[in-house]
Image (tube, rainbow, N blue to C red; front, side, top):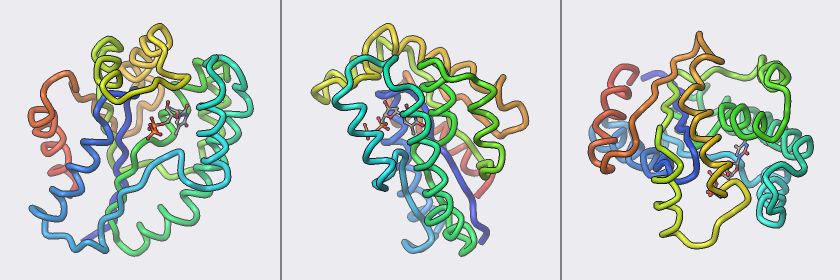
Length: 204
Ligand code: TYD
C-alpha cells in the first residue's frame, strides 16, 4: 500500500469536513487500512501560526482587513504542517486526508487582495496532492448549514461567501495540471459521499 495525499476543499458550510471524516471511515472499514495508516488533519493547524490565524479570524470581523498578515500565517502554518506531519506520514505510506490546503489560501486570500500569482509562487515547492475534492455549494445553502452551527466568523458574511463559493467553482483554471474534482455538494450527504467514493476508488 502506497501513501496518498487527499485534500478536501470548499466554502465554510460545504460539508467538506464531514466528507473527510466519512472518507476516513470508508478507508478503514472498506479498504482495510489500519488505524495507524490513515491520518485526518486540517488547516489551519494548531501550530503557533495556525492559532494566530484563527484568532485573527475570530476577533476581526472585516474580511478585507489584515490580508498580508493572514496570508503569511497560512503559508507558514502550511510549511510547518508539510514538514512535521504530512511529508513524514506519506513517507511511511500513510493516507493523509487534509481538510483545506493551498486552494483555500488561493480563494480566500486572493479575495482579501493578495495577488494570485504571488499566492501560486509561494506554493510552488509544496507538495501537490494526489487528489483534490472541491465541494461545490452556493453561498445561500452553505449559510443555511452554518446557521445551524451558531455564531458566524469573519469569512461567513453572505456577499463574501458568494465570492468564495464562485472562487472554488472555478479553481481548476488556476491549477490546470492538478487532479481537482469538483463535486456537487448541495445534495444530501449520502449522495455526495457516493461521488467521493467514486473518486477515492480511482486512487486507493
Ligand atoms: P475552517 O475549515 O472553517 O475551520 P473551523 O473548523 O475552525 O471552522 O477554516 C477556518 C477559516 O480559515 C475559513 O473561513 C477559511 C480560512 N482560511 C483561509 O482564509 N486561508 C487558508 O489558507 C485556510 C487554510 C483557511
